Amino acid sequence: MFSKLFGKLSNDLGIDLGTKNTLVYLKDKGVIVNEPSVVAINNRTAEILEVGLAAKKMLGKTPGHINAVRPLVDGVISDFEIAEKMMKYFINKVHKENFTLISRPRVVIGIPLDLTEVEKKAVEDAAKSAGARKVYLIDEAMAAAIGAGLPVTEATATMMVDIGGGTTEIAVISLGGVVTWKSLRLAGNEFDTNIVDYIREEFNLLIGEQLAENVKISIGSALPLKEPKEMEVRGRDLLNGLPRAIKVNDEQVREAISKTIAKMIDNIKITLENTPPELVSDIYERGIFLAGGGSLLRGLDRAISQATKIPVKIVEDPLSCVARGAGALLDNPELLEKVVSPNNLEA
Image (cartoon, rainbow, N blue to C red; front, side, top):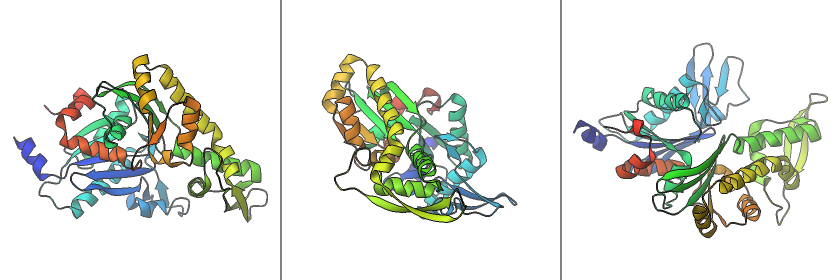
């Protein structure tokens, strides 16, 4: 009885705890927080200085006593205390803007498919320490499919490829469960690293990851563009240590990220090979669905379609569909019971 009362009074949340960005979905209001998963901390006092967008602006620019860090690496919590403080900041931000008598919400969090029990426990403990009353963990690919409005409980296959910042989740879903899957520790961040490495090797120029991300967003593509693009890139010359600017074009960026794209496509093919024939038939008819920020890379959907001979569709608002799916489960206890592991369920 008290649990139901608390549920009516609290602001229950769906959270996409991403390597690059954290999104928070508030019941009845949609996604109200979308900020980088970055925390700036004073090493002398252990004080949290900034979280989110303000902290991201500090990356690579801090003095010795300040450290701007990402508490998640490849979808896994690498620094428990900082991850806890980051979640607490986002949860408190929601409750300050949306007053409630009871501040301890139920929280549904999207996680990578291959997390170990220890890693899952770390996510759950961090969320509870940050103020959650009850924590449910759900596979990101399942959350993305639910957020995209796909029929995950029907006896038909849904193939979801969720390309985030740290992980790419490939899953074939049917009857409310994941039939076959692959979880890759390469995604948007890997593209950025590829670009940094390429520019260093080809031009003897060192650039930061934030600039590499801007290059990827501005001129990156998986297939040749109708109109070539180029942009100026500034960095440190590795030969003399002085600042230098160069021009890079879309063809060079494509070359830099081509191996990572090839690995993604190979793993999509492997997942299809391991899928029962009846479900492959459904996928061939309905197509492969892409979600996550990485799906917005120009031409990636066409590149996957050409390689697999299957139609590929980018879901509506791919950046927020994991958070929306996690939030939607708060209104659907029956589906929540199907897709969340039994030890996470309330009695």
